[in-house]
Length: 553
Image (cartoon, rainbow, N blue to C red):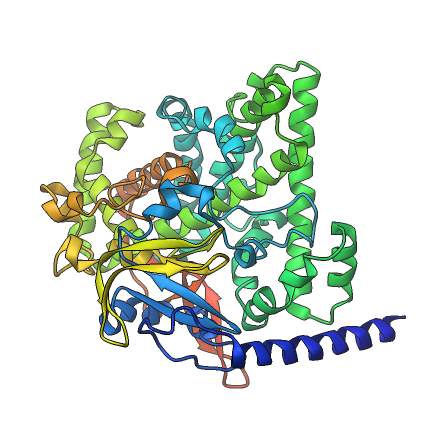
């Protein structure tokens, strides 16, 4: 039976590749008149050039080599890529009428691998957003600030233990990831994932979530996500799709499947515990987070909602993975980036430490939300880091219908014509470069690519306001904009500021002797490379920094 299935699968793949090859030869490229790099492969086009762990520098170089709007061909189909700031406006302001999340980016989340578990990289649906908006309001963030401080105090105590006998090299990415997960666990679900004790065992959910983004961005998974999985997800029920996936002789896919299974199991446990507490009328104030966690509020609001506004339980369940991903990996890597930059810029670190220390001393303890968010240099460092180094550098979208895309400035086509808008056919898959929107020198000046926190302490250039960048945060595209903007950006900001506020009072961070390289695996993450026995490079996710205690007691 298994042999017959594999024979049928092989025949299907052979026919499919033949069809794609013919389509590549005879299909008309609607963007052939727009300058762009030549495909690097007749099978994969430019896919592996655009999406590989070392592609970050390639994306940074693109605006210097080509005009702001260009196209690449990904396997048999063209894919339009742009990074001009006004161009994203139709996606985020006109919303789902014209643009949807790209189907093949949706299959980044293994929907058929485990029904009910999914990850929405482009923000929640309008129905979900309606229920989530109150729990991400400033008023709710104000209530959650003491909880954030309690969690980060545990982090600080654990790091103090590691450096009690003197300076030590510590993987700060590990600690930032653990802390971010515990914060979203307590404030998001009334659940504790991690004691934050040195050497304590990591929760299986944490391990799976940490490895998932990297797992779906291996070369074989990249090929599969674009060339195979979209067709698997298009046939039969979720149960049948799971049977097909289990039968595929594909090591990387099975690893991703196992990660998602672990996450699904934990999500069900959290969700069922929340429902049971609400149904039995238990006193939620005794739960972790005092019953103010996002999931408790979300489930209760859904129970109280009208029938037409009520979400299915499968979508509520999916929010656990979605919110955890958004609350852990992106923010933890943003914090890791800030610590790395501070270690390399000791003068900036000292100035920030002075501002923070004075504020905490004047306040006589942990800062409230208003005081913490009003510290100018801390805010400038967070904004500048998210501008120059957005954790998610690119975003995938797909057109629902034919559109004319306005350009921020005219481009010259291959035949010498100057155009200020580009026709994009229905079902075109688009990559929006958030990174290059944030670094556009026409907006931010000739030093746009330079990390310069003090730029936020003075009036910004008029060109920033004139650019009309449709971002929800500080004229940046880091948290997107419009109906698909990141609903939890205030949560992320609060987490970053509490962590930096408490750690910098106690520790000095200095660069490690190890070389840290930031790789693009969906999210930009710090890695350390070292030789394996066979001489090949082994890449490990970590940010080693030298950490020392400022005031040894």
